[in-house]
Length: 261
Ligand SMILES: NC(=O)c1ccc[n+]([C@@H]2O[C@H](COP(=O)([O-])OP(=O)(O)OC[C@H]3O[C@@H](n4cnc5c(N)ncnc54)[C@H](OP(=O)(O)O)[C@@H]3O)[C@@H](O)[C@H]2O)c1
Image (cartoon, helix red, strand yellow):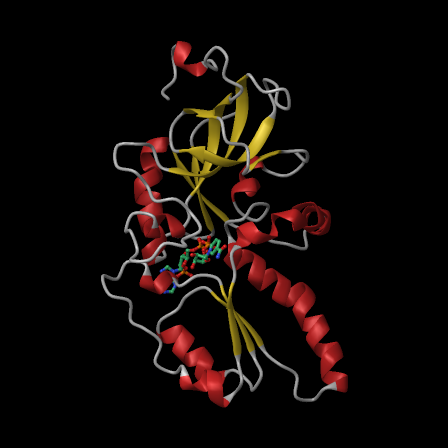
């Protein structure tokens, strides 16, 4: 939906909402949604040519036909790369309750994208303490690796991880632009070292979101988390910002500013 017309109203009889998009999240998985993989079982929808990209963002309710949302509410979740969007599926749409942080944070550190930020942070804030405690009692403490890169990196991890290590396989960004994935060459180390590698999809953990906010918001308020954003201005800057992710052009979480509140 573009701005400037009746389009911005919820159609009569529809219990959807129309939102004004403020920030959009640039996420590596969008690349995978362009190329249809051989198998089903993918956890997000493919992009359809001719339709706006859908993805995560922050928006303001502009018109509402839904009893749970009113004009002016701030929301984050699934929206589209356009100025105004009609939303009728509320499975992945959350009202923003805490506005004492920059709203763009809900595209990254306070939302499901930006997993690199989470994993690094948890490692420092939580895992190191847990591991230190365990080490006192179990000298053969396991290592945990949160995999987001793939390719040669995963090969190196398999070579270097300790016996009984665990790998959470979250993303393989180094593979997304390749016509043919490189594959993993050191898989025998899974066996030699009895490693457990398991896929991780953030959507399976949304029930923990309130608990996560309770934990992370004070850390932001106390300045214990330094969070960097790279904000591209204007919807038109979206495609190049998205492509830039794959050559590391962004410094910090890549966000597109569509409109001011
Ligand atoms: N499973 C899930 O539920 C889930 C959800 C969200 C994200 N993910 C995955 O998490 C990973 C990070 O995504 P994000 O959302 O946190 O965004 P992000 O950190 O902004 O990811 C982009 C970064 O990836 C790095 N990168 C790009 N191409 C690379 C390559 N060929 N080799 C190594 N690093 C490369 C770049 O970092 P540098 O600038 O430092 O080079 C770039 O800034 C991705 O693999 C994504 O698919 C998984």
